[in-house]
Length: 296
Image (tube, one colour):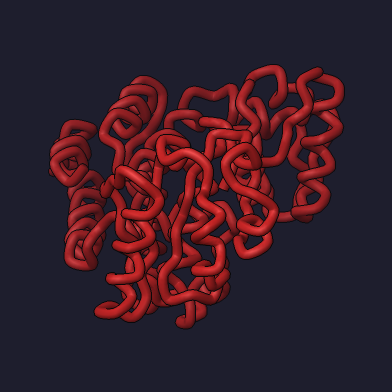
């Protein structure tokens, strides 16, 4: 895959989710000194494990892919996959023959000028079946700089609108409103298992939000991740539960980062915390912090 920093996490999450759904064991955190060492290690792995996918975060450190190893590549259907994360200019390191035997994921180039970006965003909304008004798109572009964040927020707004127009009023409520921003940050932080994002989201929500709706949204995300973790892609739960592409992407990321037992415990504890809040016996926001942060 080839992308700038803002797009890398989404593309990597999609690649990992696809591999896991196809039965690959995904391995990360390893390093190699050369392509030959990596290829030898991968070939040896294939002898003892049915399907393995290796993530290489900085393939540029190994230099250009050696022409002598091109014949070893078996293509996307190989039992051993290499997920190479390039920060642009992958063509400098991978020749045409290597690219031809690979599946390339590239981030879409987002227009720089605001007027062009508004048209681009409306087009993306239309292709996703979301009716986004020009005023709503203009406000989103003015408020959010990152293209990936724009697409994520657009998906969430489309879900909230449920077929109605995503207009200026809804954008102001969900995007300019501190509670809406905090909710998105908290859910993304949980699914990516990043404590910093969760803390940021919690702080924003504490100042402007109610706890029970936050618990309901968090429980929904945990439940999605649980079903995907337990039953996999063949279970049909993405469609059965009505997940949007954005929700499914988040859920697959969470499913890959949490054990099944952790998700089961989290669901039960969030339900318990919600019941306590409804009966006046809860600890408020500090209770959610104590429940969530030690798991990250």
